[in-house]
Image 1: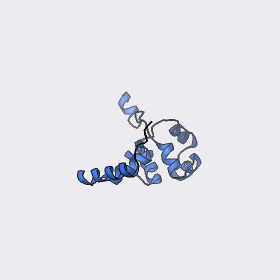
Image 2 (image 1 turned 90 degrees about the vertical axis):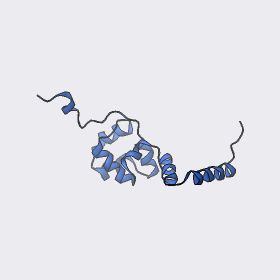
Image 3 (image 1 turned 135 degrees about the horizontal axis):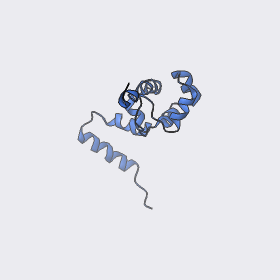
Image 4 (image 1 turned 30 degrees about the horizontal axis):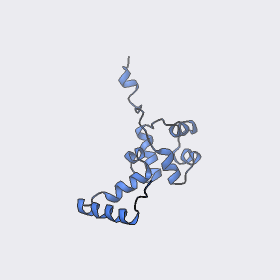
Length: 109
């Protein structure tokens, strides 16, 4: 008789993701995702309602959204910024921040 661990091995723990945001950023509807991934429409609907897709589906979704699976758990804008800043020196990041703060000063409330 299989134990509980074996039965639930393919299930993913509930983890907040940004699949609807990625779909919107790429101009894709739920129907597009169904067609492109081969997932059942009820499965895609559950993803849009917060269910975490399994790792095999994360791979397919990441490929569809032209990103990596871990990025599904970040907002597309946050992911863009992460990729923009990666492999930059601390000095370069500080210059970028100073430039942005000068170009876009905070408005006082």
